[in-house]
Structure formats: C-alpha cells, structure tokens
Image (cartoon, rainbow, N blue to C red):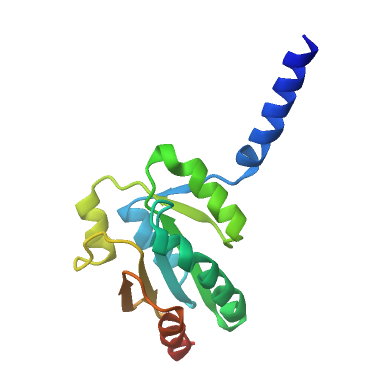
Length: 160
C-alpha cells in the first residue's frame, strides 16, 4: 500500500510540470488575421514551427534571444506550432524550456488551404517558416526553410 502511494506521488510530481505549462491557443485562418491586426504598431515575426522539425527547434532559442534584445524597440515574436494534437504536450514542454515569451499558438485551421491562403498563398506549408510584418501590419518578407538568424535579424532591424 505504501509503495502504491509513493508511486502515485512520484507520478503526480512528474506530471505536474506538464500540467503547469500554459495551453497552446488554437489558431485558425480568421484568428491569424485578427492576431496581426491586434499587433499593429509593432514589427512582428510570426514563426511557424513543430517539435518534429529539427531546424525549427534549433532556431527557436536564437529567435527568443533576438526577441529579448529587440522587444524594447517594438519587436514582437509570435510562435505558431504546427504539431498535431497528440504532440501538444511536447510543444508546451519545448516552449517552456526554451522560455518563449508571450501567448503560444497552435495551428488548428478549419481548412489547411484557407489557412495557407491567409498567411501567404506562395507558402507550401514547409517548416520552419517565418513571416515578417511592419508596424502597419503589412507583410514585408518571408523566410521558409533554414535561414540564418543574422539574415532575419537584419530584416527586422531595417523595420524598427
């Protein structure tokens, strides 16, 4: 009996960090446009990523560091996970460990094609993908695939 109680306590302690992590907010094509509108006045980089995407995981700590240094100048990083529902716990854990700021989103479109159209009709859905918007909310640049952080940062600094 004591062993069972200890096992239950150990299991609860291991599960606690997963439960304590904030939920990923679902993002569909309509929500995406609203998110951009809500951030007018800031230079915004929307980063699409997934836990199964090695280049995505590799660039995230660099994006977080860049965001921290440019935040005071009006820069905002928004992350949208492309993970499936069964991978959300892994996504939350990664975002927590990487200390990604702000609200976390997960792509949950009503229609994949409508979502891609809302983001950029030229986008194939490949990851990582980042879209840079100026202070008026106008899309200024896209970065699809592995891109040097210095390249992304230079584009952001031009808009700040």
